[in-house]
Image 1: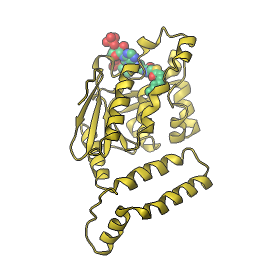
Image 2 (image 1 turned 120 degrees about the vertical axis):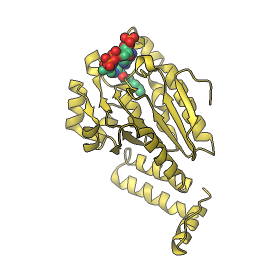
Image 3 (image 1 turned 180 degrees about the vertical axis):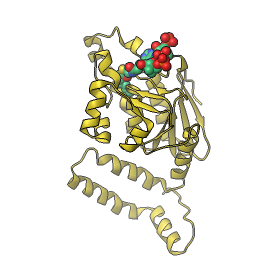
Image 4 (image 1 turned 90 degrees about the vertical axis):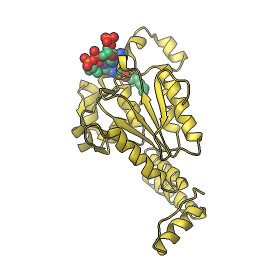
Length: 259
Ligand code: CO8
């Protein structure tokens, strides 16, 4: 699907679009062209009524080893500022459908940040997370100081960002950066399964749930609870609510129409 040079897009069945980062020679280092393609592919999946979830993965060795350092090294402030360098790299966080990152190997710098822009991170035992920008004389540029801190808390995030040390898959699981570590070789399959499982729910509720959880990162508790309650109340206007609750009472499986 699509005419892409840096990613491979395929349909994994059951309404799941699989996007594979594909710059093997550079350990999937991220550049503007790759992100333009990723934005395009995720937006297309978001628009496509036959798609319910998106999985983003890399290779066995690397989810992504960061922004492309060789392309970045000659940048100057004025150019970076005028072109709003990295400005469009966070666009996938605007996608409304759930995105699952299936991470094997290195997820460093921008790679870790890309995984954190996704809604769920599943990790292979080989997964390795870190923000090594400090070793390059810079700092994280796409959420590493913000999303990482929300996931890990201050002390551990500070340690990673200030020393550049990486987290193993087990540590990442222990501290809540990833939802779980799955068996070697199974991470993509498992992520697709999770996507398919979400696909069987009522999709209005799925999008509402994603929106509500994400709101918790932006709003005060009071405002967040109000937002949640309003959406909860609004869902009583959907056919899926009637179907879901009637099916329970009638002891049968719900058939959601996504309306
Ligand atoms: N950029 C460019 N090329 C890279 C990168 C990278 N980030 N990472 C690896 N490569 C290239 C290597 O240069 C090498 O190329 P070549 O074969 O031509 O020499 C090839 O990939 C294979 O890499 P290695 O030989 O180094 O493989 P190793 O297994 O020995 O080491 C490592 C793997 C440890 C991952 C190592 O490659 C490494 O340290 N990479 C850099 C990690 C890093 O510093 N990442 C942070 C980059 S800065 C950043 O991400 C800023 C974030 C900006 C926001 C992004 C928004 C999403």
